[in-house]
Image (cartoon, rainbow, N blue to C red; front, top):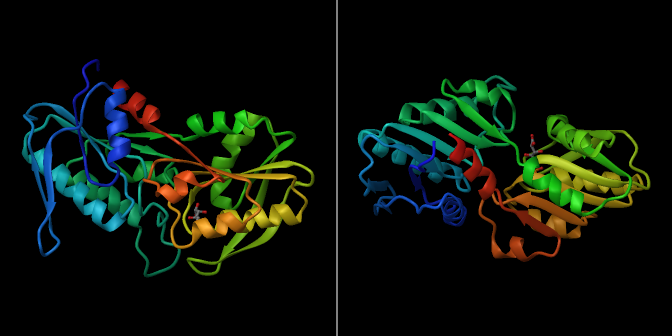
Length: 301
Ligand code: R5P
């Protein structure tokens, strides 16, 4: 595809959307987006989209609001007779509930897939989905991007001596393994027990970090509990330097405070979600833009 079609965005991440559109040499599609006094969302497409393929870019910083906004955007485009809709989700919320780990719980990742396709998505571009089975929850093609393409060069530029890659829990092993292969470095793992949504405990450490430069890798940082506890465990075991890498930086609750006080020397993440000024300017933080990655994927479809 040589001509870039219309790109519409919700309200979640205007900076990233503008950056992507600029790389693709276009501007964002005009739409009126508002909220009624009773907090219902209103949307009107203001471009001649009939018969055209369109992209819809939306991240999910505020998952409940941004999901409904996205669904309304898809429905409006579908009813405007577009040719096809490719949804670009830099951060796919509700992905962690990807199985029924106990009776009475929902599989929200599957529900998200059903909602998006029902609303009108014909294709999905997503980045670092929490687990690979989520791709299979969709009956539409999914293009799964990996942020390591933009994060690994930043890690390399640190010229770390004697690196060891550490997965802070079982779920992170697949992400950490990509880094271990790239750095030709050993992979260490930790067994994590989640006590509450705010509290985790590191139970078993497998591997050697003594005197080494640790790169801790996870798909996301929410409250910071996982990466900070893992960093503490590495420091106690004699790690010389500790770098943390996460594809998605949610930085919920007091995550930044925890990171600040932790032995993490540098925290590298992407702008898949908008970052506050505090996060962006923090000396421990390095935010890498995924706009070129998204633009490349969109340009090749
Ligand atoms: C869990 O399965 C995820 O991969 C992350 O480890 C987790 O969501 C991080 O959350 P927090 O930063 O609150 O520990």
